Image: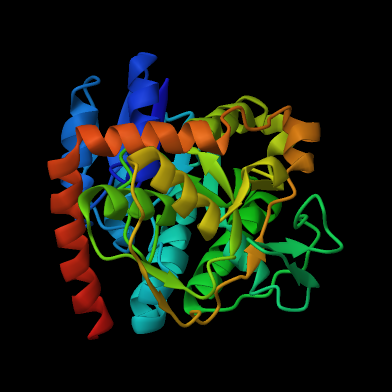
Length: 355
């Protein structure tokens, strides 16, 4: 069996590649290796087995088409490549569109033109639901709570893109679904909540759990935007890879569908919750400054994951406290790698913000 992973040297992609290589599968990674940490991730992947690298930019439609034609016998495609930060999308909306929307069209067209019947799993986002300001949120001492949706935001919630990132990912989300309806591709859309785990070199504009852990462990300046009561449901990367496997194995019933994938209500935490846990774990107060809430930042988002449980038989196994413990231990064991990735990301962020 062969698996193609776009963005395969990123956080989720590298974990997926290592899993499939351990199973003896053939793995083809499509990645331009431009993002900080990806080159290091790829070297780590290579230690798990022989892997093919197509060092191609997802925006290069011709090269993407050729890569898929050369690997048209693949049975699974994970489309994970993307621009992942709301802040970067605001600073450079054209690049955000080209990477997320055009890049996804390139993948879909490559599969269509190569007549591939592989399962395509697309990593969408909860940001397609907008800022959710119309929902009644109740402020508690440590967090915000949704008054009328105890199980979280369902897939039936109308999409309402808010930020260039939401627009580009939302457009791609709908294209992926429609390529099943119009062209018969075996596509599944997973609207992912906050994914975290090892090999995630976070920064404050994306990968917030990893960023909190790295900043707390290495003493980097940490900023809380807003009141710290913002709530997200969080999902450890191994649980995410499980749902990729299940959706692919049940593609006959899953294709053409959209599923929310996150930690659900049991793994919903506020920024304050994470800071307090890290303080206990590290044995000291976590210094941070407070800044204004960022545009488009959802005050609370919790995924209603009941559809995934009912139709796919999937639900998270790893409690958020256990997952954060694993991440803390990984950062402690990879301090230099995390520091180097942070410094590269900080420079990249300064450059993109100046565009």
